Image 1 (cartoon, chains in turn red, yellow):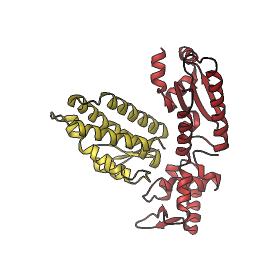
Image 2 (cartoon, rainbow over the protein chains, first blue to last red):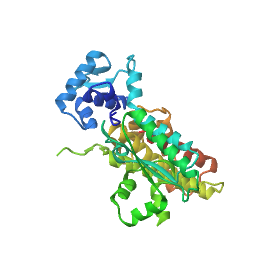
Image 3 (cartoon, rainbow over the protein chains, first blue to last red):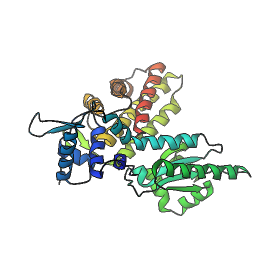
Image 4 (cartoon, rainbow over the protein chains, first blue to last red):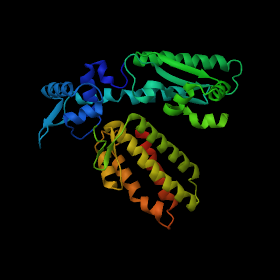
Length: 208
Length: 134
């Protein structure tokens, strides 16, 4: 699933992006503004998509001045479904967050990073998850930890069709990676979306 | 090259939106940390809540519209937030109320009440909650 443009699960890619841009705002946009916010496709392609969606009635067009203004027709029967699909990214973050919040063995940190966190994921992208385990897992807790991580892996794949790439670290390993200036640590510092526990910046400061 | 500025609204990148959201989170975390029944500390929390609210509103506008408001025109910031298809439709009002207290908490010698500070922290929290869904 393309989690940057979830509507692409049911619509051609450019149509999905155009609908996503219009669903994000209650205001009208010119075709050029839709294209700018979308950041992909051609200007001509965006105009063709808008014309097609106007024919379907799901997009309204008016020309108050020189350029036509387009807006999502929120009274259209399809509009609530379009809006719901456009919010799937936030829903996924919420689902993962509530699953991790229910874990028997709590992580010191759980977060999302990589292309999904940056909002640039596509249909082929993994969902990157960073987990930092508690300091010392006693016997039995280790099994419970691995079971809950395995369940999360399966759920992410079932919810999205994308593979989960889970990095499961001890605090000591995280600390060592930071000392070694591992590029992954930089990407965690820059992109991490906190799901549970301390922020990665606080954790790295504490482990120094 | 396309001009980046259009009046007092500027375009932004996803990376900038994420950074702005993290700033909002940091402001709010510290605001909650210092928010006590002490009026002096509550005033500091309220000042941070305003900064958190503005940063969170910027992030919401940036993620949804790829642009955010710049400058001192508070009404424009509220209007821009009103252009976003929000899950919580009370957010433009919450931002407007936060901004209405900006001068008092940042520049006035008068301390704000503890109750008012608590309300402002809640308002900023609601803005960040919305930003976190994007």
